[in-house]
Structure formats: C-alpha cells, structure tokens
Image (cartoon, rainbow, N blue to C red; front, side):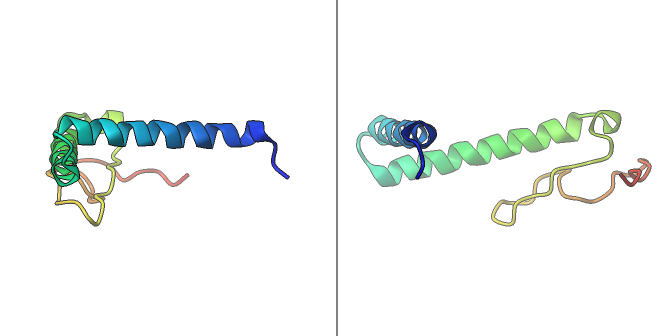
Length: 93
C-alpha cells in the first residue's frame, strides 16, 4: 500500500493543472476552443523565441549540442541535431 503522503504531490499537481485550465478558459471568455487556440499561439511564440536564443548562444557554451526539434513542431532556425559549421565534434563520453 502507498502512504497518503506519497500520493499528495500528484494530487497537488492535478489541482494546480485544473486551476490553470480554468484560468485559461476564463481568460478567453469561457470559450474552451479560444483557450486552446491562444495556448497554441503562445506555445509557438515561445518555441520561436527559444530557437532565436539557440541561434544566438555561443557554440562553446552549448559545447556543440543542440536540442533536437520535436516531430510535431515546425522546424526551428538553427535547431536540430546537425553539427554547427566550424565546430569540432563532441568527445565521446
């Protein structure tokens, strides 16, 4: 059996998620479709901003590594697993 204390974080996370869902729908005048649309637009903007940050970050700081693009997202500028021109290959660990 699991102790109630072990289940508490999952309950808190679920309650926080439900509260966030309610806030998003309320912010869109109670229209769940508009809330989903707004969240998709916001997510796209954040992905574009992240792609710009990766494009501006130095190769030395990133050690030649880039985060691979998700299959369901549009290709990001400078993203993907391609090696960066002029960078040396990463040492095997």
